[in-house]
Length: 79
Image (cartoon, rainbow, N blue to C red):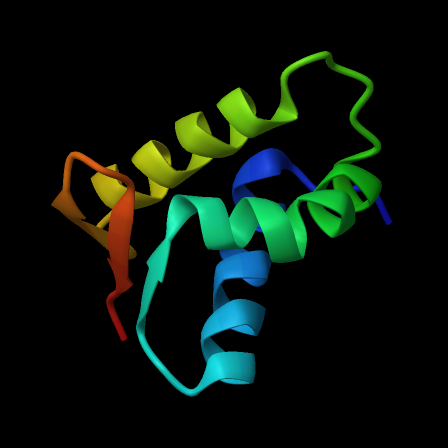
């Protein structure tokens, strides 16, 4: 099933946090550990998936699902 970028990133963040037993994460950690799966889940063919990931994280922040901790790409999952 093809996922939207928002849903794929939401799932990726939750997987990452569960795997590491914490609620905070760096954008770069999600890129390194989850971006390939996100691209697969969304069936994306774009040239800049890392930028789309950033957009999706900002959208999740606007929805109140993640907190933007600083301007260096540090986030916290809101549970």
